[in-house]
Figure 1 (cartoon, rainbow, N blue to C red):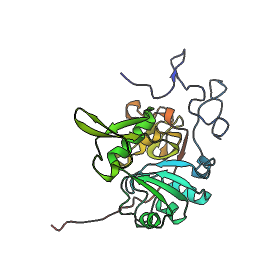
Figure 2: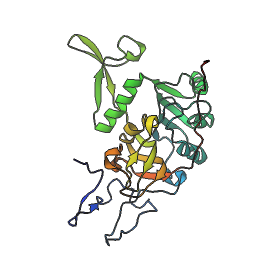
Figure 3: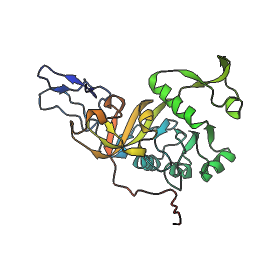
Figure 4: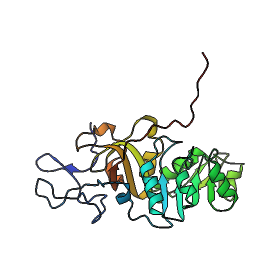
Amino acid sequence: MRRVVIGSLDSAGGRRPPPCCGHDAGMNPGAHPDSSGRPYSVNKIFPNADAALNDLTDGASVMVGGFGLCGVPEALIEAVRRKGTNNLSFISNNCGAAGRGLVLLLEANQLARVVASYPGENKLLEKLVREGKVELELMPQGTFVERIRAGGAGIAAFYTPTGVGTVAAEGKEGREFDGRAYLLEHALRADFAFVKAWKGDRWGNLVYRKTARNFNPVMATAARVTIAEVEQVVELGALDPDSVVTPGIYVKRVFQGERREKFIEKRSAHRR
């Protein structure tokens, strides 16, 4: 049985997009009447990163996909730097690495708070935290991703045994279930989610490629506005519904980023 990614069937058997479902009314330059004569056809395609985040304001919270330098929405990060938005709260696994990714925003002093699970090799972030210029919230990686998943699923909080008896438990409510101690963790949500995908269509359906998927799909579900930077924009029907990871109902805006170098964070070789 095939699942419907987004939309429904009309009386003639053709797929019909829901009226303005997940769409930024009045903001999308790609919106247009379709060939059937219907007054509105969903089109979430934006011309570039700058247009896609034109309503990002000071003090916003943003989730950013990526693990190390893999699956990072670099064009969106660069657009934030050009825009000069400040006092931002970013939720990201490691907040950039090797002078790339979110390091650009740290260098420009645009971040006020970072929520992360692995910033250990980010020396600039360490420096700014020690100087009191950036607030940092750390947590185990499993807790990090589950808090985001809970936010996308409408779950306010959950209990986990991870972190019990460590500094991660400080200030948190604890309970015991079946003789085992647990901590209460609250869901994470954001104003925006910046995700990187391999392919996307004008309805916002997304397909990822291998490990570049990482945190992107779960973050796409947990924000008020999800913006997808894709390597390829494809026509409706080009994506196999069984391959779609993020249905378009979660995505507000899509744009095709420019081709980028596949940067290797750490290169090593073994002697034979």
